[in-house]
Length: 233
Image (tube, rainbow, N blue to C red; front, side, top):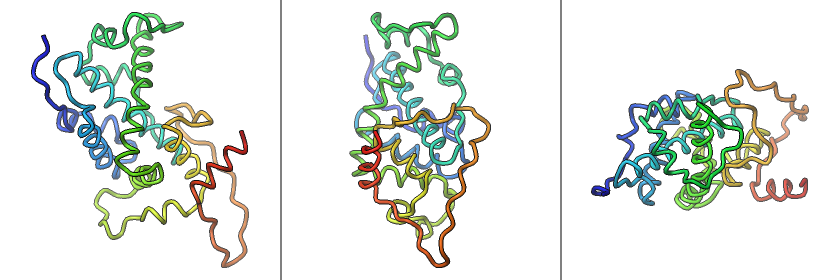
């Protein structure tokens, strides 16, 4: 029988938060905590028993995975360990994970230790739409969510009045921003697969064409970017 429902807040995962989110060692933990609180208000961090605790833990892993992928698109950073390693930190049981998967979910080609990894990957992917929908609704738009995630590269102790504004972030064009913005706007799923997580270095970006002295940097209009990307399909 399930026990009383309780919310697994940030404190329940604080001991592993730096391991899961600390790619940049800057403001990412503050963003992750705010995002987790948003999920909590939406009822996605409530647990009434061990099976629920496992599901909430999978959502925590999904949020960390999403942020790591964002870092790969934005800055070529972010290399989380295997999901099964994260499951060890969170004291997750393979039997409970199997219950979450259910009997009808095939995991082709997986066996032994890879079976747990494949199962966790499936569960994390299954939570991605709900996390995206909830975070977008809280932020107000994909653009605002993207800007908040982009600001995680700023120092944690930077005063609010010195942080880059949403407008500045959204209107200063770069290839990395387009890539990362597309990742956020399309449901945390990129049109082009990012480099393999764990790759030591990102390939060097092509040099930008020279601009005439005094020429202004191109400005990023998110709607125009998405419209242009649709034309390339």
